[in-house]
Length: 460
Image (cartoon, rainbow, N blue to C red):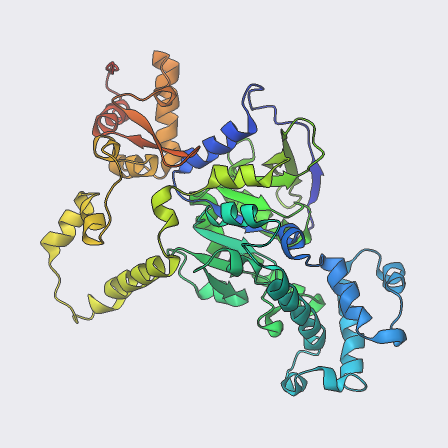
């Protein structure tokens, strides 16, 4: 694949100037009405545990060779800023050192590994593990408020190229899925942290050198395909990355080819940039990805903010979800998958089909069976999310319903989402978060429009 050219563009022209960053972000969340997915890069690890960036990690590894090591500028002059080639050259030096003077610095099991670069990976992994254990104190840290707000997001999942385990410390109960394990994992679950470039707990899994990246690029489209469900069905917020980072470039290109709309906008993916010196408090811009393979341009929203905690609180989950153990949800999902894939087809359980039919037709029955209840009566009068409305109408995806709603606005001059009414309600789920729900009457209205029938809107 040819590398893309990525350039920053001017402020988003398609957004109304009066809309605040918070309102636009809230709109992205409400459009999908599900928990967001976080895409987390090295920037957050640098902020919270002082983890080195890519170059910093390579410099640290090189320093372990002592006075015999060449200066890092030697590699810069030889390879330019190509960190993959620099890392590979340093890894080769560390390999030679490990088998001579540095032998006692490593677990002897590493000398039986087929990957000669495992010694540099072990050095970097050890450093990251030390930083994580030393710096993460969610009560005493200067970032304790941010840790609390971040964990309260309760994201559906987290995707990261970071090697450290900082995210596991912040998001208690979330399960790390490492490297190629992502390709074998069931993405219908909840509460996973996907370390797609490996994790320091297993140095052998780290993607660091030329052979690692060659293998990664061969599989990147498989990763993109596997993770596409998240990028299509959830709002995705990118933290701690520059969008030109080669770690994410290929992935975003592949996502853009499938998820971008007609204008090239990947509407549910947005980058968050922290800039404490920004005078306006928050700003909107966009990032353009020129894909030379197919000649298209893909655009991502970029929100530059002075306060990360404000963003975290905006994304915060509703109160009920904050109390749910992710491990419990994963267990329920795994048990359900076992029932449908093995137990029922194998005839090892008796199936009460009448009960199953009731569960599929009554949104409240399954929660009651699991010991859950809805917190308000609005969920009874307006029980459907926009995705569920699409299911009721036999449409593929929420955006088909969105087109009907916009059609009503054009034909009748009424934006159903601008107020609470018999068709739509905006139900508050937190201090500043909310979700949009739709009534049976809305489904009937949309079905009539879908069939080409004349229609009128009811007041109230």
